[in-house]
Amino acid sequence: MQYLNYIIIGLIVIFFIQRLLPTKGVRQITTAELKNELTDKNKQFVDVRTPGEFKGNHIRGFKNIPLHLLNQKANELLKDKEVVVICQSGMRSQKATKVLKKLGFTKITNVKGGVSAWR
Picture 1: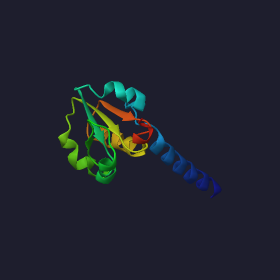
Picture 2: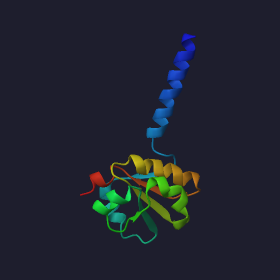
Picture 3: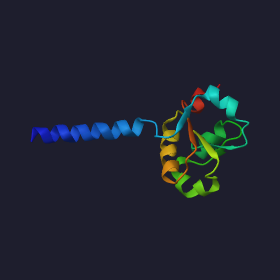
């Protein structure tokens, strides 16, 4: 019976670790690296924060598609163009990369640290 408890605890730990790890095949960049990419017309820039957060402060060139609407609004994005995703801290954008991956996007970049790290 005790082994079963260890197995359950182990599975829970693995579940949480997988949720925090970067999505496989997704490029990770810093906000400093982002500054060099903002003028690239071959990239789509998506901010997955809420409309209120976006309205309060956002980086020019980013389109607001809140994370909870990403599944429905992903058709507004081109699959053959790279998608650069940002949020407030990097957690929601990390989730967004997983959503985009499942929807068939292959060129995805996550901005580490999010808008909080932007200067």
